[in-house]
View 1 (cartoon, rainbow, N blue to C red):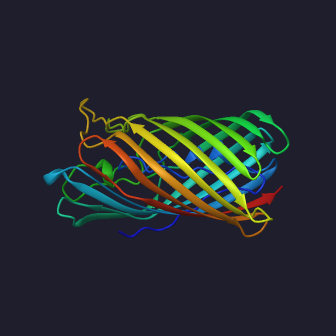
View 2 (view 1 turned 30 degrees about the vertical axis):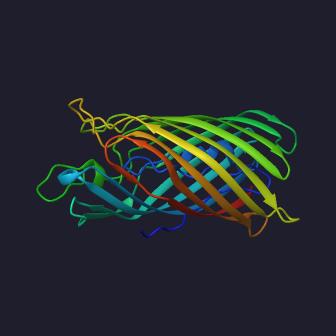
View 3 (view 1 turned 90 degrees about the horizontal axis):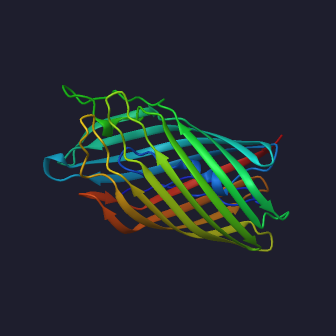
Length: 300
């Protein structure tokens, strides 16, 4: 399996970001979780670019299918006030390939995905070095990606779309405890999905993360983190009220990352996310996901 590396964000003075959790075969993920544990400083603009390669399978027999996708993501974060951060994410699929039950590619697409708009607000910040931080996050995903694609002589297939065709929301709360050179953090969030124009709705989901980070070197430019992540998702619903038996369930990940500050404003970070506990419905295949992220902070 070909696995690339994706991008993630962080500034030296503040907390680190969460890697995205690859969701059901739709390919969406709670990317706004990055708002909970990572933010630019006040009056600063942070731009990041990210590349993710994802592989996943589901179903058996003639219903078996799989996808391979390479997605670029442009993330912009701006803090107009110290407690508040605003975020926009624009995904672009370099390719999204769909494979049929015989393992043969029967569809390939490229283009814009679903754009998300998010915000983070700090309820509590104790200490100049952010010893205790509690923050609320909220994100809305807009149906900007194509959602009417179909194979020849067939009805539109939800699993070959670049967008879900629905307005979806993600809300969460995060806590961080810093005692240099260590940082401990936790995050919990839930995603609520609406139905698209065909009456199809992806299952609602909840997410949780517990992690720790340590800074190394006298300059503290080297950052290493370990995380335990969990996701529980409901089954996907069709317009007639039935559900897809090969969707949803519980999965736990072990995740590690290494980041290095190339300059005081430029951070390069690699993340490895490996599924270690699986209690998924029906037949589903999950694989490790790797990320590589490059982020730059602009003072305003």
